Image 1 (cartoon, rainbow, N blue to C red):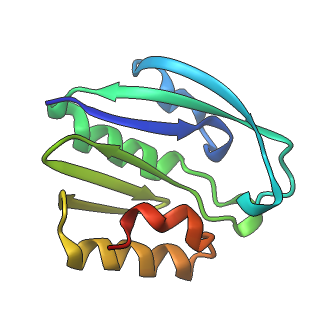
Image 2: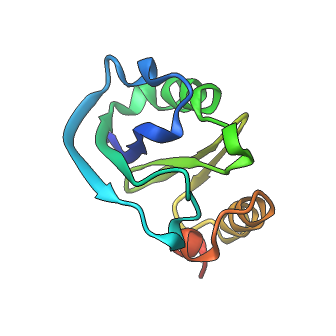
Length: 125
């Protein structure tokens, strides 16, 4: 089963990681204060589909490409009905969907990086 996710182009130091990915849709969204990225006025969201067999390879590539400029914390997510990858710069969480211990670790790690709690709400029980 394919993984699906959203990758914010402005979150990447190396946007070439998007090459070769199936992008179903691209949207440009106005950035608000709650996004905690005051250096951006808008961001570009790419809705991607990744074949299951390529999930780990793409997660690893994204983990190396996600920016750490501005000491901001970005992450990406790839998920299907069974599993998900939550991808931070140099750290990947892979879990079966609904694994409460891993979901808590994701939230704790994201908060430690300064990601606003409301952006991590999908990982809270």
